[in-house]
Length: 124
Image (cartoon, rainbow, N blue to C red; front, top):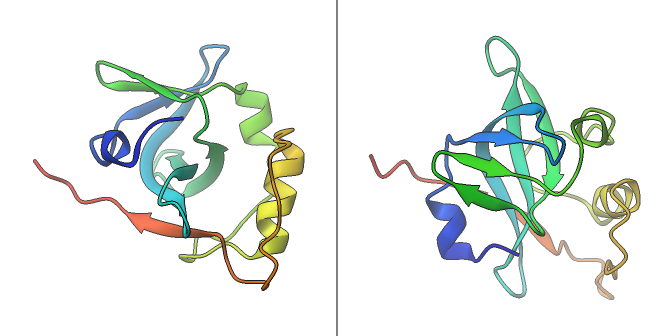
């Protein structure tokens, strides 16, 4: 999994799938509220970057100006639609973990959000 420091430098990079398909541009990262570790990447695609996709951060790597995911473009395109409103509910997190086959998901016992949106800052 990429470190929180690594993903800070990934803002606006091109994102490709494990099968080489173009997914879009990285615009945000959802992090675990307890650990600060990246959980999901928010990727914008389309002519005006108006379509948003959430993909797992686990295993994502950077090479030059490209971030490569460990999932296929088809998996990203068919992921559950989640509103990118700053937070994910436990139900949304569960649906994403199930869709991507991530087996390490355990809902927070207090019903609190585990993942929140982390706004990246353009350092350019």
